Image (cartoon, rainbow, N blue to C red; front, top):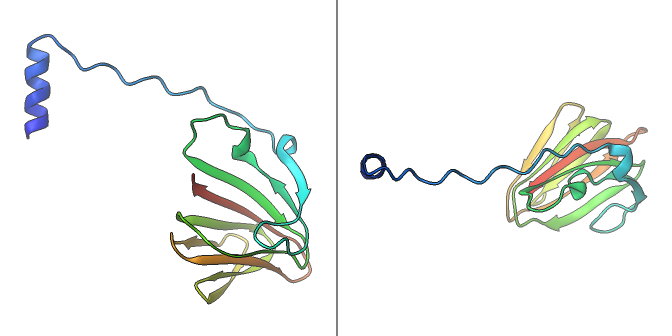
Length: 137
């Protein structure tokens, strides 16, 4: 109640609050421009293809958005996270772990992982695991 009353009082005095700063312009990224083959993070278990999409966005940005293809036998090793994180599977199968609890993920499934957990994911089966990894920075 106090804020609307204050706003009304300011407007009555002819002092409108300043407009918010404009948003930065949209950034469009082609995944081929950010593709690189590298060992997965957190243990370098096997090989992967990384599409570090949000790395192409200039600051300020509030989130990371990445596509990672874990080749057969590859894994993102277990590691503690200091933010919530999402693994979303585009294709293939994988096994995700969060604080010692394991679950199999397949196409169209996501794991929401909580800040403070120790998490990781490994590829299963005979096709690569293609996933999106997203988290705030």
